[in-house]
Amino acid sequence: MKKVIMLAVAVLGTVAMVNAQTTPAQTAPAKEAKAPKKDKKADKKAKKAQAAKPEAAKTQK
Image (cartoon, rainbow, N blue to C red; front, side, top):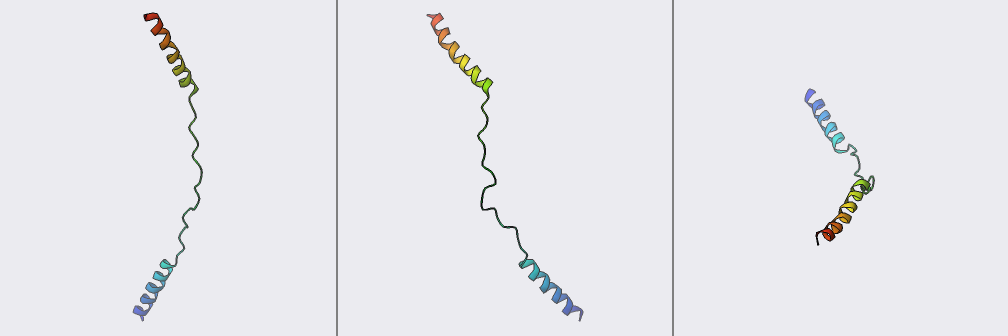
Protein backbone atom coordinates (compact mmCIF):
# COMPACT_ATOMS: atom_id res chain seq x y z
CA MET A 1 0.00 0.00 0.00
CA LYS A 2 2.83 2.37 0.86
CA LYS A 3 4.44 1.77 -2.54
CA VAL A 4 1.18 2.60 -4.35
CA ILE A 5 0.83 5.88 -2.45
CA MET A 6 4.46 6.84 -3.16
CA LEU A 7 3.94 6.01 -6.84
CA ALA A 8 0.79 8.19 -6.94
CA VAL A 9 2.63 11.05 -5.25
CA ALA A 10 5.52 10.75 -7.71
CA VAL A 11 3.18 10.68 -10.73
CA LEU A 12 1.08 13.59 -9.49
CA GLY A 13 4.19 15.59 -8.61
CA THR A 14 5.67 15.00 -12.05
CA VAL A 15 2.41 15.99 -13.75
CA ALA A 16 2.23 19.14 -11.64
CA MET A 17 5.82 20.06 -12.54
CA VAL A 18 5.27 19.49 -16.25
CA ASN A 19 2.03 21.46 -16.35
CA ALA A 20 3.27 24.29 -14.13
CA GLN A 21 2.78 27.62 -15.82
CA THR A 22 5.99 29.44 -16.58
CA THR A 23 6.23 33.19 -16.96
CA PRO A 24 5.90 34.15 -20.63
CA ALA A 25 8.84 35.84 -22.31
CA GLN A 26 8.49 39.56 -22.94
CA THR A 27 7.49 40.26 -26.51
CA ALA A 28 8.02 44.03 -26.42
CA PRO A 29 11.08 45.86 -25.08
CA ALA A 30 10.54 47.53 -21.73
CA LYS A 31 11.94 50.95 -22.63
CA GLU A 32 13.89 52.56 -25.38
CA ALA A 33 17.33 53.77 -24.42
CA LYS A 34 17.70 57.53 -24.25
CA ALA A 35 20.57 59.33 -25.88
CA PRO A 36 23.17 60.48 -23.36
CA LYS A 37 23.15 64.14 -22.47
CA LYS A 38 25.93 66.25 -23.90
CA ASP A 39 28.28 68.00 -21.55
CA LYS A 40 28.03 71.71 -22.35
CA LYS A 41 31.23 72.56 -20.50
CA ALA A 42 33.25 70.10 -22.56
CA ASP A 43 31.80 71.55 -25.77
CA LYS A 44 32.78 75.08 -24.72
CA LYS A 45 36.33 73.97 -23.87
CA ALA A 46 36.69 72.23 -27.22
CA LYS A 47 35.51 75.34 -29.07
CA LYS A 48 37.95 77.51 -27.14
CA ALA A 49 40.80 75.12 -27.92
CA GLN A 50 39.95 75.18 -31.63
CA ALA A 51 39.71 78.96 -31.63
CA ALA A 52 43.07 79.27 -29.88
CA LYS A 53 44.96 77.08 -32.38
CA PRO A 54 44.57 79.33 -35.47
CA GLU A 55 45.56 82.39 -33.46
CA ALA A 56 48.69 80.65 -32.19
CA ALA A 57 49.61 79.68 -35.75
CA LYS A 58 49.24 83.30 -36.91
CA THR A 59 51.53 84.61 -34.17
CA GLN A 60 54.28 82.12 -35.06
CA LYS A 61 54.64 83.42 -38.66
